[in-house]
Amino acid sequence: MKYNSLDKNLFINNRQNFSKYLNKKSIAIFNSNDEFPRSGDQNFIFKQNADLFYLTGIDQEQTILVLFPDNPNPLYKEVLFLRQTSELIAIWEGHKFTIEEARKASGIENIFWISEFWNIIQPIIHYADSIYLNTNENDRFTSQVPYRDLRFITELKERYPLHNYSRSALILRELRVIKSILEIELTKKCCQITRDAFIRVLKFIKPGKYEYEVEAEIIHEFIRQGGTGHAYSPIIASGKNANILHYIDNNHICNDGDVILFDFGAEYANYNADLSRSVPVNGRFTQRQRDVYNAVLRVLIEAKKMLVSGTVWNDYHEEVGKIMEHELIGLRLLDKHDIAKQNPAMPLYKKYFMHGTSHHLGLDVHDFASRYQPFAVGNILTCEPGIYIQEEGLGIRLENNILITRDGNTDLMADIPLEADEIEEIMNS
Image (tube, rainbow, N blue to C red):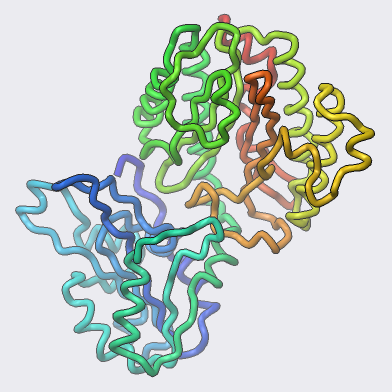
């Protein structure tokens, strides 16, 4: 791990909050993520299951958490299972958690090696009426691969077919969306690293640079500051590439006169930032580019005002759409008479602004949350309007990360350059 040790109280509190939602005489079991093969003898870099990390702080493969608050044996109310290391593993893979280190990281006292899991679970699971199991219920998730949680469910049901089975995800969807003070601080750290990377590239960009050279500057700053790396595959989209919403090839030359759209964020301690900016390759916006840029900026400013407790997801996006319509009329991209006759189910503004304005942010970049629950204090959301004009080879997206507070909201990226004049000033300094 590149990041500093985290306060174990974060995970102790998370487990306590989760356990309050369990039915009486219930046991909950969580697995770490799979290790995915990258080639014949290598794996991809391991990424911990967000729910397991949320409850334990253990950032290591082959880990299992068992929570059984009503267990009659106090030894097994809260149990962590770890991969047992060896001299050979230490030589080839490096250091793994010792039992004492895992206690300090998680706040869990009772820790065993994972090889002991089935022997320990067998005598205690029969004292539970219900078994809570976890799957990925993020509504953006699809997979053809039977990942570890699904395989575990199959095995457990074969061994214990008469238990009642319940979904942990229903509880975690309520809990993870409300960020604690420690989680907010970790997100701020991600935003700070992302800010420094953005300023670094502002001073680096010039005509003739390749998009991947800009990407290299970003990852340099992330790793230099102890970040794990990119929160997601970075978008470095110059010119017409900015009209490809998930462009990640990053292999074109940044040409004089074009705008380059960035969408990147740092990952730190499994938490994430998510930033979008659009800047002129040569350091000066044309008048048209500036007009489109300022239109997006005005939408961002107005949309941010609506990110408050009680706002309903669909109502929010509809209101942002109305603001965007006004700006697109001002840019002569839409006509108000055509808008008056449009099909409300397919508004015309979606030709130029076809994605949503916000998503939740946390341990996942598109964090686990209900789109049907009103926004609440403690939510962190992105705010990312954009205008994409295919025929002009121009795409502008601006995005900040917003914390909802009791008094309204706080922009966690307020110190990252946003105004067109400020960006030009840094690029030409």
